[in-house]
Length: 310
Image (tube, rainbow, N blue to C red; front, side):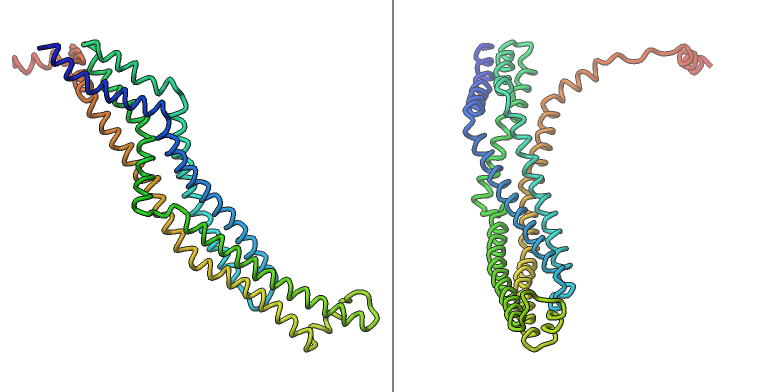
């Protein structure tokens, strides 16, 4: 009867341990989890790089002193800075989870450690403690890899956006801006060429400061300058329109990242801590119950005797 009870208790934990240790050593789930985190990290880092380019472009247009732009460049730069900060925070959460996953999966010995405690569970006096240690170790590895892989599957099934929309939006913005900037530079080159031709017509081989002033007040020079300013304004409008949509996209991304890479991991760790406390609660209770009571001091003994014999 005792043998049957022992087999009934030992077989399930043995099968579970061997199966999960095999999953851990195989590494396929771990690699899929890392691929999910790596893909999210690369997408976010790519978006940060494009935001940096757009910040430089907005600052360059803002410093051009074109009247049509006014002080709007400062507002756009502020929006881009906020977007950069939010996306950086999102990227930090993903990187932290990646480091934790790699940390607990780097050592082969850590993966084999549950087998050591599994062997100890065959000793009757050690069985309770060893089984609990096996469960705790398995929840860490491959538990973390299974958790991350599970979140990747849920994200794919629920179509959570982990930065793809943001990256596509920024790529399109950069392409549009580059096209408008090319048109602006062509208009600026045409203006410079016009000034050069007018200068050469008067027998000069360069554009003097006086000639620039004259062109600024002349009809032809003013018209050319206005075309350049309008072209710059169009380039800036591309960034401004992108910035208005960018804030919404970034906030949606941040909300998803916080849920996937902050709330859910904390929930997993919290449940793990509750599980561990539950497992070892009996041992803690027994240890507290067997703790020796403090010895009575002579003063307390005299007080007790006085109360009993007034």
